[in-house]
Length: 134
Length: 134
Length: 134
Length: 134
Image: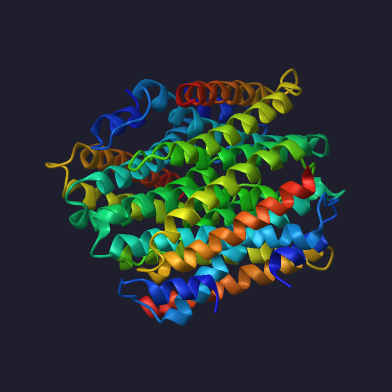
């Protein structure tokens, strides 16, 4: 059981989602924020850094959006479906864009391969919650 | 001229927006992130804190989304219209929700009144860029 | 193997730390950022919210500092020992303060108990890296 | 009067600092977070990006630490002198390091020149509050 799941099970707030799916999405957001930050850093260290510019920017943007989304989802007191949907849609889009960019370098750079997988996991977790909150 | 505008005028990247409108939106995002953080804190200090729960959560969520948006908009190298649109739509929605919540307390709490105005400014700045990027 | 560890093993940068200890600290920072965000939210939902004000503020501050620290530690390209030490010392202090505050409510609120443990883990991970980088 | 100053004047919390100096430091932190984010992006767009790696990493780290510091300083409810000092010391150090790095490129890149000035302003504002809280 991750910390996110333990925390959801100990809050007095009512949770508007399946606790499992919500915890999985929160964990995916924080993991994606980390992986994208690290991928931007690894791309910056590559000899071919000039060709990694788009990947660096996309990673940094995805990291910021995933961080915000992980925090918004961690707040269930006075939950707003509209706020949640807005940030989940942005996060799903950011992860899809970042995954596509990293996939295009996955054959050459392992950090892009791992980051792309992390983004796809987060994209799917956001999609699941969006389905659940529809 | 704000730092955001000076920075946009000194980057070698091409800017996909009117520099004035983009700088105004970046400034509005950071100002809104600050005001929402401070409003959550001021609500927490109110005697009637139990009645300010929704405002606190909304403020904290809006602060996180505005912070992410201000950073994404500050990155114009290898600009992605899709990434930008995704985060602007989330930010416009978050600011509209937070403004509405704060406006409902504006007669009683000056911090909510100021925060609501800051959110409306940011909402409008996001809408302008979304129109521009349409 | 967490994503943080996989990413460290795939970067072309030289790592100035034991990869295990660095990955453990990065993971602890992101986990603590999540737990503190969730604990602030759970405290806000408590009937006795007025008595949880200090815990809420401490949680929110610790979450912000852990988020920044987790990202700084994820960047190893052109690593700066001074930058790393500065942020690790702030994070260690923030986690110690937040752990102490949460421990004082741990008998009453499970979310504070879990959050305190997460903070102590992060405090120890920061102390280990500070020892390593001394 | 900036939003930060208006917010401080409308909170029911007692402020442990001169409101002018605290508002100036909050504003400096958010402005520095923006400038450092933009400078990293502008460095990434330079033809000589491979030589700007250290500046990019330093900018990104400074941006994260300034964002956290601006938010911590915006919270005055149940103010903790220890938490505040910890984050101010990290921010002062980060701004000093980033200013020195950007100054070394200031003759060549205007974005580094502006960013260095913003960092020095933030460094001084943190030092002033640290003096005040000593």
